[in-house]
Image (tube, rainbow, N blue to C red; front, top):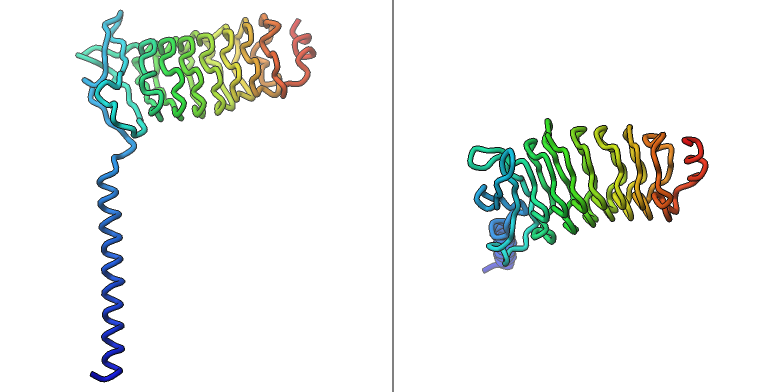
Length: 251
């Protein structure tokens, strides 16, 4: 065999090896994509637990059958059960998902979020509330220490936000108080990342409501004109300037 032929043969062998490597890499990628579960975990209606209450059902969820799974969860709460609406999210209803819950979609039928419903869901990034929502109540510590929660838009139907509801929610930068809410309860935004708040009609700001938060400018809080403000409501808000002047103008 001539040297030229030998060289050509080597080139062809090398080309085949390269093609084979590429094919193997593609197959590995395809197998990996199939083998790795999607981050979106889909649940059936029967995976939830329901309690009969006035007007429909209250919903909760427990991980009894999912102990060995670790994928993040994007959760869509059912709008109805057995032909009746889901009107409530149970107290402590979803804290069993605390280490996995990434997002939650809440149907318009829900009228209340129970106390500690999503407490310490530290990987929870977003809450989507359906348009036309009938939501009226956000319970105590409902989103307590949800440190990755980037924001939440509450409908104007909301009438009360419980104590410590957004305590240490450090990713929330701005917040609009629904027009139906008249009282900012104790520790509601304490240790949070909230820099500005908008709204109107507030009559009272209770103990440590914004204590140690990132609130910066009280021009953003003109919503509390005429409100009763507890002496500790803005305790240790290091970025806040002119607190006494701001309070004096509303006396």
